[in-house]
Length: 292
Image (cartoon, rainbow, N blue to C red):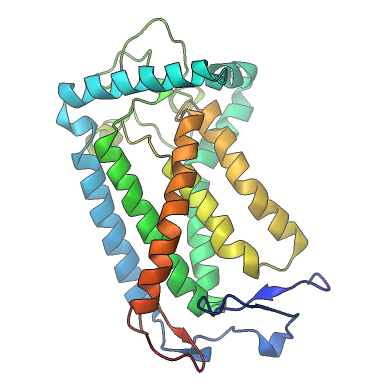
């Protein structure tokens, strides 16, 4: 482990930073906190929350038909106008630089589809096993962040770049744009154009970018308790890599990423406040803490 590194305690109320800890002093066991987490109850909670999130997300988007589609198109043109107004409309230029490199694009297709879940789940498992008090807080922050994204999807349906020149039932079929849906060509693990994904996904759930929101959350949740320099650097790079992935694959505008960042910023204080008021079996307390 990196010498001289510091670690953040799991006492969110105190917010103090401790000095270097020996292995025997680290809060590795769930019994080190007031209250106990159980893996089976966490799986039920997280699974139920994501199931409800998916159901609600899909009811407020492309499944509603032409009226929402036209709103999503109009919002996309507004976003492009804003980006042009600040001279930062660059998603197409980024894609054009790399679109001929099939192997490179396929890598980012896989990154886009895999890391969004794999990295987030890994951070949650790490905190659950090693920092249970921090886990209870950060899990609640993630839930608030995801809930805010639902509000964005419902209030601001947005057609992603890949659909602007797409003539499928969900696309604008606008020949003024020539984005490539890289999940179709050259392809990856899956595609939004598959019949299964068309049936269950909200094609206009682009603002805010949940890919960016979850990536930023991973940094906020894990970075203070990561001690290896290489892992810390990789975690810091992860949101930037995600930003590149969502743009080179034409799944988001960069403004969507700003929306994802704002979702975390807004959700964080609300998540911390709620976690302090949850029962100890949902959000364990530091040893010796006075129950709220």
